[in-house]
Length: 217
Image 1 (cartoon, rainbow, N blue to C red):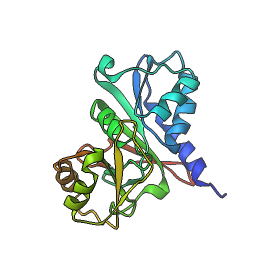
Image 2: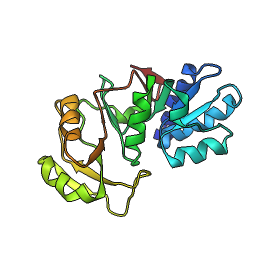
Image 3: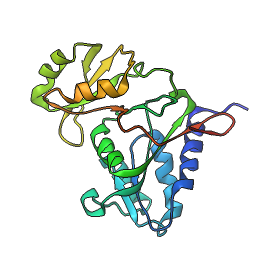
Image 4: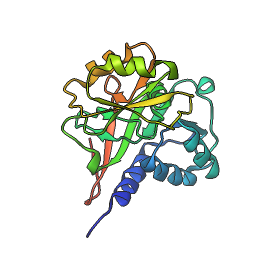
């Protein structure tokens, strides 16, 4: 039986429902796989207290299915965060930010006790870097950060502004041998708001939708 990527994403999203508990506030990420998770949360309306969202797009979708959206400043630590990835390794280190929400995603992940990443099996790689690495940058620092990076091919995502009012630089042609080290290195460049490497705080669980079902790492 042929199973397309969307069905694999849906399978991973459905599997993440097993981590929900009555009365919790769940952190919710951004992207096509997360959209399946948000749609499934409609069945939990009234059973969870609400959600903390990582983007305006996810906020709109959560409200559309009747899930209250809360401010992280008011919730304290979260028990669970569910989000997707553009690339993932078997060590659960990730590249995220293809949709431009990496900063808020990183904040919610950091504030959560458990981070469950959901993706289709095509996102699993041996080494991060084939997918362009997104970096959110203060607009006035765009050229400076580009010069300071000194690696890969840096492309300004023209015409795109993040929910935080910043710009995105996408770094192509990388082969990332030390994701946690590179994450720390890029974070030290003045003007960088956040880098789309989730290696210093990787996901705790990786759920991959496959042709046969869901693989858990």
